[in-house]
Length: 566
Ligand code: GLC
Image (cartoon, rainbow, N blue to C red):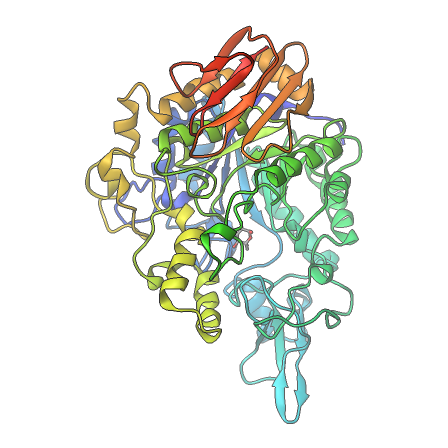
């Protein structure tokens, strides 16, 4: 694949469309709402939008359950609205990446309906439909695999002994990529949208598109759900590379597009490099999961606060590991958060030091090696909304199926609520407050998901725009700096070194390139000392108004962060 570079001086922004801005009062964000904010995004300085799925969907899983790939979800608008969005984004120099789900469809997709209705149809072969096992008269799933939504990965087809495989919600049957006819269907879908002028894709859940041949039982022990979450069976298998190579040869290589895969399933940087290396990798970048959950939040139900501290050393080592493997040979995306995670301010930052920690997180991420992606709402320092009841979290199918398991295992209602408030991905999906008016100006109707309360107290776009020291104004300034050609050159091509990597509190690194750029960030809500032996030539970004440097020791206040030229 020839090298394509337009994203290398870009800053990305992730849109979860149903929560961005509603233009027609139905409580769901939509394309015209998004289109009306293109100037806002342009002024913020971002120029690549990854938009979560826009296709027609019954919305069991926020649109990742696709009913018709060739139709824009009517909740979001019309086909014409979509064309206008492309046109007006391009007029502002903003490129669009669509989110394409390849691992599954909705149960309402015509392929699946036909697969069930006509066992001899071609579409039957698009899915994994297998006979269950009869043990002592009881019908059991074909194997012991667990879904990512905490249940068996198999759903019985009513009135039969057959089951279909679903690694995510039971309303999202997995498709079989070993079937060449199925692959052609996806090639055609991608071509269709590229021909319409979009600039690339975020490929959803690509890690899981290949399954162990024969779908054998996992030999690993079953967990509390009674099944086995075994990534060896259905994640990052060798065939993923073959499928994507074919996709590239037949589709991507004919376009000047950016393709970013979502690679969960504990992918190693070495394996990821095969997918993304500039010479032979079929796609351009992968989002890995190693930078999230370093606060011990993952599976932390019932864990005490002391057991849930940010492991900063591990976080830095993860960035370093990916950098060391990828730097010379591949491009990388950077992110703290997306629609699948609680807000980063509540994970690694602090509501008490909201302004300082939001800016600290930004500086730290923005200047690491890679193309940064900001998640909507980060620019105003949104925190988790902390909904007051467990049911508030049932808008997500994952939470819906997780909670009964917790109850069975004896966790109290308080423990479950506390866990959901800290960890639910729904927290990252609460609608964007544009002002302090009703529903934060997000909708004139009833929002599909409640907003938190904070927008009433200044955490909204308008109030922040009017405050010169706000998070949003800092974002704009910092992104401007990040995109300056000389700084960009140093960030991408200078040699990255972590300074005092085993320091448990301070995230510090240096790019040694045309310039010497250094970031020093205190990731704690208290003061820490940090030894410093460089000569400061310029303070490019800083989230406090004075520098406490005495005799080669910085006194770093809570979440104090610098970008320095040294
Ligand atoms: C990806 C999406 C997530 C979705 C899942 C299944 O991880 O980001 O939101 O639930 O795939 O499509």
